[in-house]
Image (cartoon, rainbow, N blue to C red):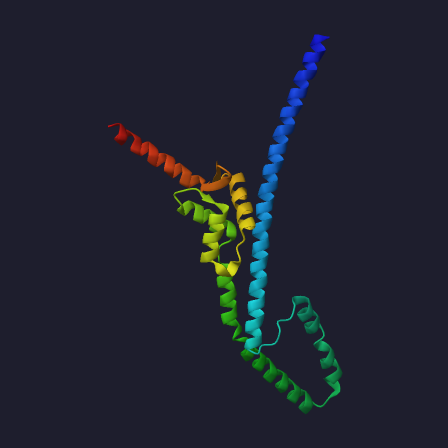
Length: 215
């Protein structure tokens, strides 16, 4: 009877350990995915902002709205239809129609030229770093642990146009911790973060200074 009791106890302990491990892994995965979603949401917001700016620039330059690709394809497919209807017209009328079409094409080409500055602006904005890159770079530059509020305040002042929120920054920091790109320490009721490479540099410096102090 005692053997069955011991076997059941051991089996229960194994299941408990497995469940605990699975819960920890599940929680870390949730944090990582939440950080990725937050980063993607920020990229989407940036793209939507860029689209609004480009539309405003387009309207300010007096350019016609840019057609969607399927609409442009359907319009181009209907071009041969009027040519077949006009095939019975005199040569003079067809010639004048071709000249008019050529003039309109050249005019449209000239009006589309000012789009280049807008394209450059969009490319410059698309090249700006993501929030994950900003947070990781900020931690790397710091010599002391930083809280999520400190990171959000500093980045918000440096990038006021991005509308950085502390909740998104905290999720991003937890995502970096899950990827072993940052370390989390608890100081009382506060949680602080340090870049992994920054923590390694601090430990190396302490080891280098230890022999000198011993002397």
